[in-house]
Amino acid sequence: MKETLARNIYRYRKESNLTQEQLGQMLGISFQAVSKWENAQTMPDISLLPELSRILKVSTDKLLGYLYEDRPVSIYEEVYKTDEYYWGMEPNSACYQVLQWMPPSRYLRLLDIGCGEGKDAVFFARNGYHVTAMDISDAGISKTRKLADRWGVKVETHKADILDYRLQSFYDIIYSSGVLHYIAQESRTEILNNYKKFTNKQGMHIMNVFVDKPFIAPPPEHEENAYAWHSGELITHYRDWQIIDSSEVIFDCTSSGIPHQHAMTKIIARNMSE
Image (cartoon, rainbow, N blue to C red):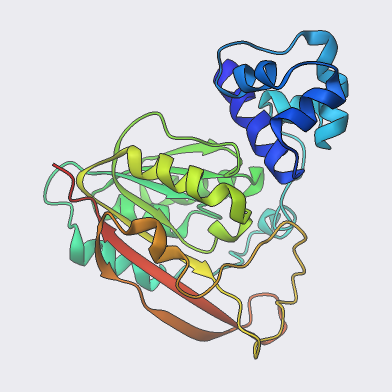
């Protein structure tokens, strides 16, 4: 809990545009005390948690890292509860690039960050990868498990918020499609560095992000907690890795029932560290 709390204090302080000194003054403590919290050297006194939560505009439970199973936190929670698969059953085209660049000719651990209803995660499991899949939606996780059972494969599933979730074990492949736009700009370096840190040597990241284009209208879903990326931004996080692909596409989408377009940047990168 100490490390989770430390990470969350840092994250929500940054999102509130507060310095350690400003937060300390508001709480009547020194900035050194705040620094120790954020470095997991000490923890706030329990009497300070309500005021700390108020200042950082986040619940105490969220600050401590608790995510209740019965609380809807995704706009897709309801649509995932139907028998139909909102995103269809066809694997994302990037799945085939995973097979191309890192085929499961040996034991490979793959993490699907933001698995949705599980179509890509189950595709990977069917093709021989050892798959872990996480999503914030209870209904999405449930459908992922059902789909895995239908195909007779194993997918290890976890409910987790991408903003709080940090890796603590190593993977050979980290895959994510249509999810990273939930990460605010000030948190992207820290989160992606965590993913890179826990990627095995010669391991790969295959990810995509929605990017802003002035000639494309905002998507009809109107997600308040979504933050578009800029063209060329994603690749800057992989300057120390081998870049295999960093292309950008514009495509039509009808998933919401309203025809619209998206611009998306893809990254395929390999960890070449010794």
